[in-house]
Image (cartoon, rainbow, N blue to C red):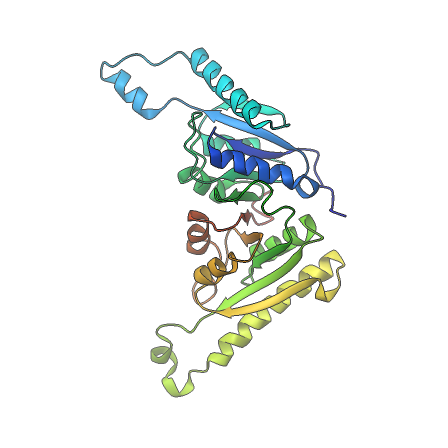
Length: 298
């Protein structure tokens, strides 16, 4: 059976009235067994364009009370139209900051991609990127191409590991949150472009990089299995040659969920957060979970 979430707080799902937000809500609802009950959160704020127009003699902005009333009505209409059975909260403030603040202590924060709905929360682009950088809890970004119930529950989960504490935290979160899923830890390796210059052609041995990647994935999986009291074969291990951005992008094709840590190693290591995660969340092909390191979430 799926493990009950360790917190009494519900998982927070950001909504903005867009079709992509509806897909994110449905995904979270389909995964209640793993993530627990959900709470819908709509954010509203004064549009900058309207403020600028008012400053230059345009029509005055609606009152704070009128804006709040309109936001509540739009959010309630969105929930009713889709038949969602979850409590709704509407808050004033920047979408990214408000979502992250509200999600403090929750099992997870879920958002859709590229939302441009009537609530003006814009739950994608800069908002999803802000949440990926600042969410105090695991952030799950759900792509807009999923059909309701597709896939649910998560069956095949891929976790990118690079040996960093954050990537190990991501692997642990996946194993704890989805105990019935097939979980595979993946590490990538690639030969440095300037390898022959640095090491000399006659001494450049790709087997060293391959062996390092194998050691990284084995150590991460062994540690998580030992920490959680799981059989050693509970987590699959795989290595792949190539830039981690392209490797994990390819892994999304068959995965139900891709899990990465917020920040990984840099240099010749796998850069599993920075540019890699930024690349992955820009156009996700499957739901992506971004996990903060333990020290970040305290």
